[in-house]
Image (cartoon, rainbow, N blue to C red; front, side, top):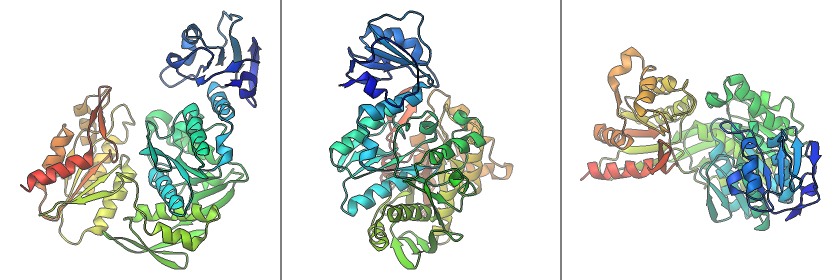
Length: 488
């Protein structure tokens, strides 16, 4: 419980109606969760406007309301604070309410289209292995030391985020590593946080359903680096053509990593096969357990961040060489008898799918077929659907288009939009099967011994979102089940 006036420190206030020298129990952005003595922050969201629920929040006992537009009626029993931007105010208030948790540990944010989860997870594993107590906020899961907390969003809302960081501080964490999504940056969920460093992986076609244009998507990603303090580092992928753009206006100390050009952290792939990567990192040759060029970039980013966080570079490389990646990221299994290789990957953008298929191509020993099972999510960026199918068709021997998370859309309509991207001369090798389990079963049935089956799009997810209901579904579990079934 804290005084409202203290929680409002550094918030841009336009008007105050009522007594702000009152105690506040909790901060709320969901009016349904309000209890007596809470402060309700009315946020204008993508689908709903919290201002329409102010009356409901007061009815449930809100002691204070923070909003951009004051209601017509202002009862004296409630303190109203008018602010210029409720979303930004929410982040600052959450930081104040939870006693500035991001200032009490080393917080590193990772942004970009692909690689965020792997980089954040590897950093968490690296620093844990090196003896530090760490926290993780990722798409797959949130974690405090050994305690796993299920994740519902890539980046939680500002209140949940600060509450989780406060738990990390309370538990003695010295470092925290988090994915920073473009939605979270745009919606200012990270407002008020102090970062020790920021990492840029890459930027490709994604989330245009939300950002509308690619230029806006880039601008939002760049805003994260623009906001870093001069005490932080900003580490960017120099091989991405927007890598340098991210550093243009940052106050942070700048650093780069690359496989192709001179950089602060330079790497070179010497070998890439199913046993892992052998890389030249600086002057040192290192064997890593991860596979593929995209993971070479992820490893360089993690190595660079480790060194920028004042760790010994030899100790970092030694610890990194023994680490596994994140669940659902080039996660592969082998059938017992026919030695069919099954790969599960979260690739849900054209660029990510191309990276995975390029990696598979480099791992092929001879005439193995590559059979790709892929779909696209409903209620999301529709422009990438034909491109996803085109990439799959051009780089696979057989393709099965299927459902991903159709959400409120008709799965058949999503698949039809994907089919439009398949070149005429490649249509013969493409099947469309709406049922995802049946699609995976068909892929295994079409596979010959030692063929490669890629199941792309959902990775670590343990559900399929259909008409608002999350049905249990695990790509890796289904893949293993079908392998066993076909070998009986």
